[in-house]
Amino acid sequence: MEPQMKRWKGSECDADSWVAYPILSDEQSEDVELVEAFAAPIVNKKETSRLIRELNSLYPLNGLQHVKRVRACRNKDSPHPLEVLLCLISDAPNTKEVSILSLLPSDGDKWEGLGEPFVVKIPARPPLTRPQFELASQRWPTSFHEDKQVTVALKGELFSPQQKATMHMFMTSAVAAARAAEQLGMEAVGAVVVDPEREQVVAVGHDCRGDHPLHHAVMVCIDLVAQSQGGGCHRSDRYAACRFTPTDPTELHPEGGALPYICTGYDLYVTREPCVMCAMALVHSRIGRVFYGAASADGALGTNFKIHAQKDLNHRFEVYRGVLSEQCEDLNMQDVLREHVEGRTE
Amino acid sequence: MATEEGSKAELEADFSINDEEMKRWMGRAFEMAKDALENGEVPVGCLMVHRDEVVGKGRNEVNETKNATRHAEMVALDQVLDWCRHSNLDVRSVCERTVLYVTVEPCVMCAAALRLMNIPLVVYGCRNERFGGCGSVLDISSANLHDTGTTFRCVAGHRAQEAVEMLKTFYKQENPNAPRPKTRKD
Image: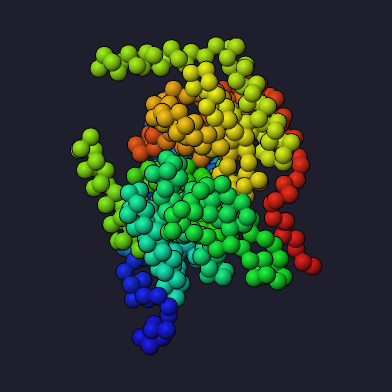
């Protein structure tokens, strides 16, 4: 490992100081919702497949296809090895005493293989992530269609050391831009837009709120990207740390030939979690992925909203938090301290 | 306290918009929207009115600038800032007494921008089912966000059908700037 590490560009060892975690949708990150159901031991094991068939037609578990009908008994010393779901409590007939006879219609000796019913809590929705699957399985056996990338990402292992070194380099530029903004008396926020295919910086920008209350670092960067494509409308050229790389049509992929279109396919590195305005600006700009260092109180990519995973919007993107987290949190802290001091002097 | 309540009452009085005013300003916002449509932009137009004076106006100019954030409201807010600079007036105190008239409900981004600028009242035509930030997709106008300016009130529905028809006309045309959809190779 050691000799290979040395060949990577940037300060590869520093890239071990942080971990990038994905910001998943609410559905992917919330706790496992449970519903109550009646289950019963299968006293006569030979009757299992017949009982399942009968129960499936009497009480189909609609919308709960992820739940298995039968589980192995948890208590290893139990005389019966299997337990079966009878029905959801909400589907059960309203009776005072719960027994097999009150839950299931008496029909000869059809239900003879079942013991006394009891209440269990089962997962109401299919698990979307491995942590959800593990929690759900503790309640009742559940099937799971695993998204391997999400599993690896949640462990913080999605990016290889080489990728992390590159990410480290780009976020370092964002931090430098943030420091430049701070020097100018503006908020210490910096951002970098990158073409990940060519590993090339398209634009570097920082907070310019001193000029315009809406010129947050992300808005500045989006306009710099527009300028790189021959458009744009801000006047940020007076700041040395705000710059863009003009699009060179000869350098573009010879086969694709398509000119870059707003931020399509680009990655954004920003020191602080974007606010609602900036987050939605990134949706409009069709950004590819967003990496941010530190969360912010009104942040809209995880803290207050998850605009990147909003169902009704026409564009969604991946978001990762934690790149250079320590340096980025330091920048935020300085802003908070400064505001505190300014607040006092007012 | 008394002065604060006084200024609040004054604010309310300023913003009791009568029908005639609404018709007049919205009429001009619709002219802006038509101009956008004629220039291949999403037909949304708006006006910023401060004490019966237009201090900003805008229409969508996303394709023209290659910047997807150049919505009518953002363009108009830039003009408000310029107006304040030229008139040597404090931005916040002007914005706190400025009404936005816009043909379509502001999107999530613009709603947040309007909050950051402390615009107190928005009069709009039709709802924005795709991107609306005043209730349609998210309700940013009244959300509890400590660092995102002040909440604002909305008056909706004036010439809504007409605003929708304009959007439909636009979306029926092809966007010449959008990348070509990838076609499968056989």
